[in-house]
Length: 512
Image (tube, rainbow, N blue to C red):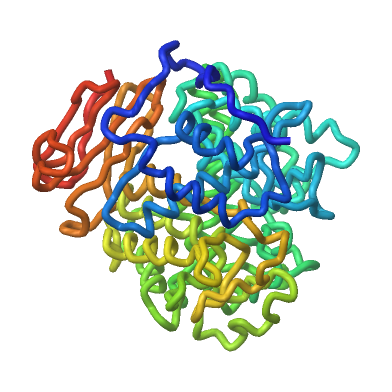
């Protein structure tokens, strides 16, 4: 049964006093929440009922307002859908992927394929118990079951846990779980590492089955799992540094360095200027696929134009760009969309929100952390993100499902019960961390790096973001008339202005 939230649960390290919005009011989302509720017959009810959702979200999420009505509406819709997947169990809270029971689901219908995206999304909830219990479930509770399900799918859990820490600053949580994280990495080495120290994976275990380059039998070396394991090793090294585990830090620093070198040597196809799958039988797969952009999700490739040219495919109509979103395989390939249409889970070109999320996060990293951007710029990011927001629709009603036709947006599973409210991607994290650009750090730094193109918006506000136990507000007001706090970009911490700029550009200041 659903329940009304408990408003007295706070994130570790947060002050005892509840934070309140400084600029916006929760009523900004009331009409949207009522509309979303009206679309749902609520045949499945988990921790928070529809009736309690407005009050629960008012207490739990950062508020957001912008002149792009599609992005703003879907921001609240994705919080509304994430809440539907929050389940209370005897072992604590978890987030489900499918709203209905699945044969391949584990205990409590838990499925790990989108864990990294779910943790990134849920890290912005004010009560950190929800996401921390979910991580603990996979690291501790699942492995104690008769048939553990965690390794049913590739994972970048260590990277997600480190990025969770950057938001909440909870060192004790890292200290409690570093051993489990390290043991889990070693298990992946035992299960999937080849003698050459690279990792293999079936496409179905990457949660990307029926792909052009993949197989359910061949031990192909894929950019996915190798990028994930690089990201995990790099994150474990950073986690170890935070908790003072010197030997673990050095071990995973070395593993990350080795894997980075191998990915560049073995998975970069110079002729195609792209990261590709290396087949078990030898040679590269002949298709460029969106998984070739995943290395940038973890800042793996060197900062050189030689590699940045791969991103040209993102704006090429024969590459990945399509009327309804980013395709999962290059459209020029003869096997594009040939594996069926909604019969299973085809990753041979259709638009998957999961892959869109990964590609947009990787693009954000390219624009923020690299000097060599190729043809990429904030306008490309914004246009694709806006397209992503618009894709949340079926029969004129707000919707998120599994995957879509790239030309007309048809959800290829239709209104299948398993696809409703599909929790397999992220959106709100892309708004907070990438579009507005709040970049968490280990130290006392508060950095904003917006990816909103110059002249695109005259105003926006992200309010009541809980970061290191403080309430952060970021607002842009070109004329000063929208919010009445002056012209330009302004950042507040617990209601106190900490930094400002006349232009919408990167801004770095101290948190306290």
